[in-house]
Length: 323
Image (cartoon, rainbow, N blue to C red; front, side, top):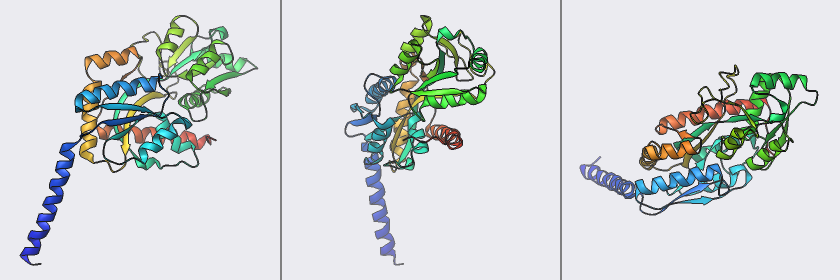
């Protein structure tokens, strides 16, 4: 190949690399949107708004939260999956982000169209019971369920919800039958428990749920983890109770459209991690009964892959299909 052609190719490659470097260096040059597939005011929305504020300070651009609830998170995830892969549209994803592709026969997007960027926060699922059934531990619940001919009614927010997965884990570990009753949201399941329509549920340890427990309006049996919550030091873990297979985490993380430049993803991850590990945000999370999810992109990807495999096996074994 003539030397002039070598020089021409080198110039083109150099120009392309220079433009890419400039484009990455200029990011972010405009506001960033975090799509939250939750209704305003809930735990997921609150966490998304907290991370948006932290990212805005770290990146020097406004970061706005755009609530797109509906279809169990599918609407918001689809919007982000189909957005330009430029780092300006992110998804505040959670368990539903992983579970929806496992339980829906058809989705408007592919799971591979969303890539994990950074974990934000997590908390173990809290297992609670109606005080009227008179149980204080998982072992007592097991004995009660085996002796009660009416069985146990377990409140969930639908097939494939985090609470449903927790309930299926409990059903298998305790070896007792549950009748799953579906409600539209956590508020409805809590109301059903307090009005004795269901006897047990497993949900994110929200401030409201914890306060109901501390007021004696429900019994906190265990946290579905191998580590106690600092905010609930007297509530044992499922592992301590002898049922380590009951393990369910509520978490929030950021996802981006496939093809977003790695340098941009790394910068978002670094900004998130710097924010969630500050003393102030740790304290804010503690007040919401959660903790920072610490780790780089590789670690968050590994978490997502592990949870997808674990929950995917359950969904397949139990033939979980969302209508």
